[in-house]
Image 1: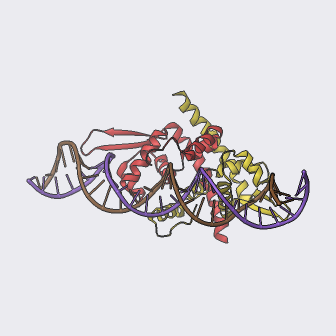
Image 2: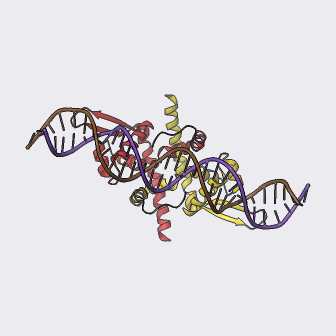
Image 3: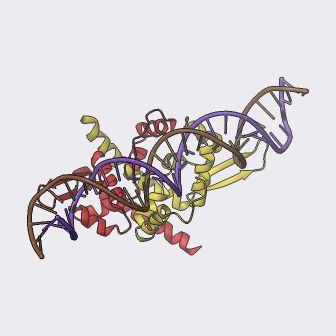
Length: 121
Length: 121
DNA sequence: TATGGAGCTAACAAAAGTGTAAGTATGAGC
DNA sequence: GCTCATACTTACACTTTTGTTAGCTCCATA
């Protein structure tokens, strides 16, 4: 999650594909390890940093911060700071973030089917 | 795409999330850099190694091999070898792989919307 | 005085993913 | 004997992502 070196062919390839295929562009938007999970929880309503952290027991402060920042950059969520003490920060899905919910639900249905197939074997 | 060390917390976290959330399980199945692209092309019908390579101009032999193997492992595609000379190998979506197509299409629609929003800015 | 919670940040380390360059086996055709 | 095409494989290097540890600020409360 550090800066991406603009000289790498790795990144160039990624961008070429993104530019040509909206589906790859989209899948790159949600492929952070915790991104989909966070989307799901925020689908139910706004949430604070600490609340999200409780929902994701194994995540570290750092990873949660990074993920939330990345999602904010991508326009999936908004971040609202309340100047209280101690500080309160709330995260919420943007409209386009909300529109992702049904797609994730589709993915979930497919995931269940796939899992059922593989658990049999 | 080397072997994953089973001792890493990184991998542990991934598995925990997968086990609990089918949507994360699903998103992990499609998050290879070229996976979605390959799914799209194979959606139109079976294809040979070399044909796929032409469709993905910047991919290397190695990456294509690795991606295809990973997708085979995940049960998304099948691999058929014809003992001709030179060898012919055909890749094809499995039934569950085919069922992914509409989901990818949903993702594509969402991706276009998201892109439109961001291109404006 | 120190303790505690909220929401971070910085420096570093490890793991996973991707790319480069070179090489393999096979038999056909020149 | 040499080259060609196909579909790989191997060894290595680099990039990106994720995790570990330790810290910090603010002010309230004990």
